[in-house]
Length: 190
Image (cartoon, rainbow, N blue to C red; front, side):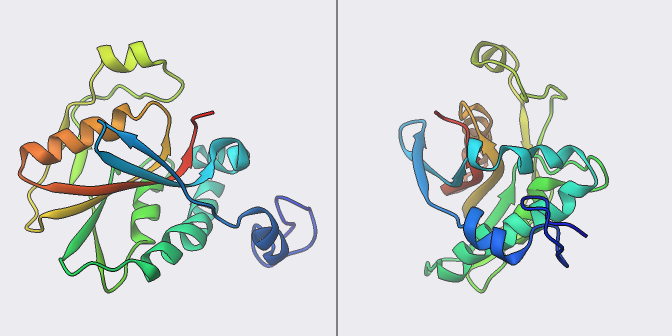
């Protein structure tokens, strides 16, 4: 097959040279609710075309690769004495897979234990392409399924306004859980 970025022949969807040159993650930080850190590995514009593959069959391979490059590396270097779980925000399946579940699974390590389908939106509204006002008027109504661990890392693919993550944090806090921080693949803030 041909590399999606440079069109050279490759055994993977994105060749090793392009992975090294174009997909080396950085670390961007912002806060939601004034007290929760959100760390992102890329700026949205850096990987925009790759992010749009989540609506296609190709997205499974792209998100798996990005998860390995960014989330798995992060998990290898993460250390905390307490037991920590990671939860993908709203891991419902579209196009045969859940992109947030793929990213969440990439966090699996001795320190981080991914749990799946533990927080999901009670509302079918989607925030993709919607403005802040729409998001305020249409809360996601997150529901949390029981799990024993106390400390949580929340995982999502993109942070734009921070509304989805804020609502997810609040739902977890109502259940007595503590969100340590959030991880996203990309930050859409300019």
